[in-house]
Amino acid sequence: MKSPRTCPPQDWVPLLVPDMPSPQALLPWLERMHAARHYSNFGPLVKELESAFAERFQMPVGQVTTVTNATLGLELVLQALDLPPGSRVLVPAFTFVATATAVLRAGHVPVLADVDAHSWMLTPDIARAACAVARVDAVLPVATFGMPHHMPAWQQFEHDTGLPVVIDAAAAYGSQWLAGAEGTLVFSLHTTKSLPAGEGGLIVSTRPGLAARVRELSNFGINLDPAADVPLGALAGVGTNAKMSEYHAAIGLISLQKWEQSSQCRRALRADLMQDFAQASPGPLVWQQQGHGGELMAPTLLCARLPSEAARAALEKACHRGRIMTRRWYQPLLTNMGVLRHCCTPLDTPNAQALAATLLGLPFFLGITHEQRQRVCTTLEHALAKFA
Image (cartoon, rainbow, N blue to C red; front, side):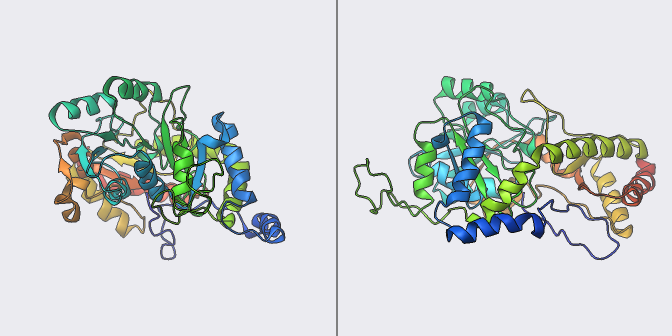
């Protein structure tokens, strides 16, 4: 999920507002960076951030690496898996475009699958059904809107099928864990995510050597391991420049310090807004339901499913009149994007199509005022009255 327009015209209710550290909070970290004269290339702040992540995931630091953003993280993970060129990678049709473009840029073919009607995610059962009707060489499920996957189930899927699974957990930091299972997770540290570093990505993987391989590829593919067969400084593979800077690591470290408090506030706000909006709406609003992966611990947005496509259109129009920002998340579907049609393999996606016709993102951000909440509630009440 990329950042929408987060600075609306005056008096509009924003859709999202980034929760970034203040310049005053950042200054001591910038002074540390400047004193070290180390600004990129796996500097001390990047290493400190990676060590903190490794501690939280209870993993060796060698199984964790940062990158400049999650999209390149997905691309490099797919490259590190050494899949044959043109491999077919199963992805949900209901996701942000980066999931598919990472597959294409890694030289593979996205196979677009349906999602569960309740959790809005590609599940192991859906993946098994897809494998029965189409060739699949790897699976790239998405933690939709940050909702976590049940990793033991995906580990069992890998064991049963032999297919590698990589979780696009872009919006799921703090919610998606390995839970004692094996697996590979790719998180975003974008400014709109629950752990913002301004921009950045995080790869966590139990697959032997994968994180180290991604780290190498993020540095052009240059070998920095004295024990490797390739000489130091020589190319071990064709990579790119995807290293996290010390600037972004500094922001990530500050965000990590306040993550628990921020996540509690986000959970409480989501519960309050869901209750307020549901009570204000004359017709039913349907919210994303958690699967077997556990609770959404740090929500970053709020999407409601409306009773019909007409109801969504009416609410959108009313919100625009009331100066309230909304967003049709993940639309059009990947299957409906002209640029992707010639290079993807679509499967039947009835649940994803239904979501695409009725889902609407509503304002959700820390610091939303009582007046802004009331404005959304009043708009819901008036716009949906005839759909009750």
